[in-house]
Length: 152
Image (tube, rainbow, N blue to C red; front, top):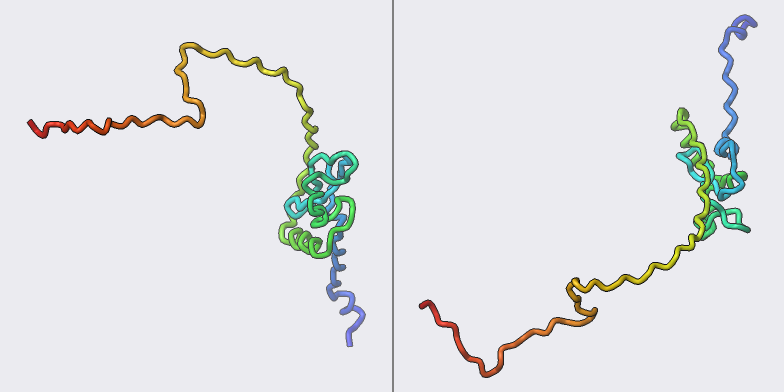
């Protein structure tokens, strides 16, 4: 039987760490302009930096085959198996800091270029054979039977 003094001196078990949830793998800043797919981000979670097309929450790459479902929506839950991978990575490398999401690139605008003027032919240039034309092979006439003199 323990005395009250012995019980007071016994080490107290540290409280169990709260399990990591999907919130721990969500970037602090979520851009509404970018694709809403969560990315691996080195095991820290991140947001896809691509611009999403109008009327969609995900970029073209994450829309194909519903690829966004692998890591989930950046502002939503992570599928259980993938969350377990995130947790294992976080426990294995606790000192890494997550990268800040990149600024989205603006979509390229269609530049209207003036059509190029056709090039003037260069009269001093050597004429080239038209495509598909083979060089004719010249053969000796059938009656030509002259032989070269052998070692004179």
